[in-house]
Length: 296
Length: 274
Image (cartoon, rainbow over all chains, first blue to last red; front, top):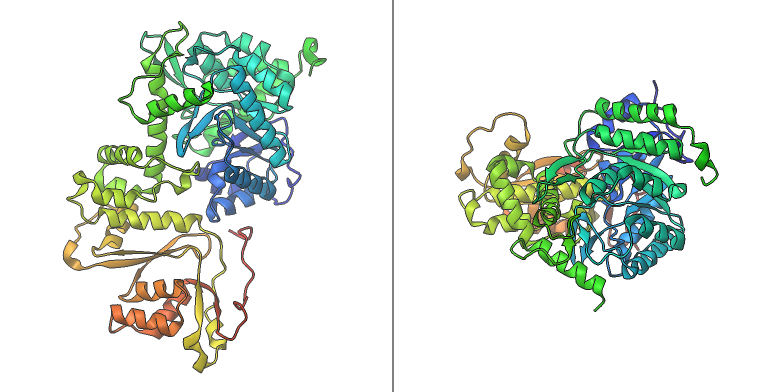
């Protein structure tokens, strides 16, 4: 099949499965033009001045809708957002016109140090005020709505006075941001925090969800031999997460759904197969539960 | 100080220093502290940054082996954690760190291989630029050419070594098994650049690195040629100039009477053909 450029400049993300774009797959994608709903990239990987990453992303963006996923804005930090980083995000958004832009409920910078991870925040009134200020700032600076992703956490702050869901729902209410529901993170955090993942999904502000993420986790154990799941993104989506996804889709209806693989990246057909599986689930149980259609 | 700032401050300090205890009030589902849970964050940071270095320094990793590389990367991460959220930029100081890293002292060429790999990464992500056409300088009248200033392509980097670092690097980025190298065979200078889509690495003759450095600093052709001759008395100006133009090392030139640079080609914004 010929890969026609220019067919997706409008760029709205369809309610289909997409795949996280990896350099290993640039050529395969351009050559074979797979039937896939969209691609997503980590914004920070395209913050160089030029070079092959931009050349390939430009070519792929000309053929597919694109969503932009930030991993380092540090929205949960106690200090002002990095103006330079926001400026770089704005430039990327202007250049590539992504259909969606998302970031995390997490922090990764402190003073001058950057920690290459999504670190947790205490769910307190003070954090809430700070996160709301930051999301207002992002949406105002970028001139568009952002989606906030729920975190995969390994521990809790003893001083937290909100549940994670109440905390996120209140952020949405105050900022008008949308949500990215990471089902793997729901499963990982629920296991690690002894929550019920199905009840988590049922209590979540689903009406604001505009995108879903799916990924694989690693199984470890904590000091007391309790299961400790790690949000590793280095293997296929777990069956438990597929089950939870089907549950969420019955409530949400079909959604832009991303297969994420950031380490031990396999050959393209393996990721495409996972995207196909997500689409099969969406067409199988994609009709909204009538009991919830009114709220959606 | 607000409590959030304190909280994240102590979290950050404990992340950076594994000798520190886990901050209080970071708990598992039973409400009790858990060292293993905090260790996940420490490990994520370390593994993520080690991977970033491995991706940017594949030849260094192949030369020293996986285990040694991990230990050296970890020591570097503690010494110089990233200051920017753009990890493409991480590792600018890795070569200098390796030069001071005692356990690597038996491989005196290793810092230069790291410098070459760093140059490669910088060239890969550098701004786009349309190379000057080979015949462009022919338009300049002969008596004015020595006063011309050549504008170096934004991706151009030069990696100089008193060892055959380029030969060693090449052996360790190919799939072939590395062969013996005579470390006393002399130094090598490498020109690393990305005129179009792909990074190109070339060996430079003696004096060429000085010539290019002078041009990059704004010298005229005559001045740059003098610098090159100081480095190598046999430096051949026209041969070197032709080779560099042929490689695509320049994007433009200017002459002293020009008000500004002669804009021969509009800058490429990277949206062209791959």
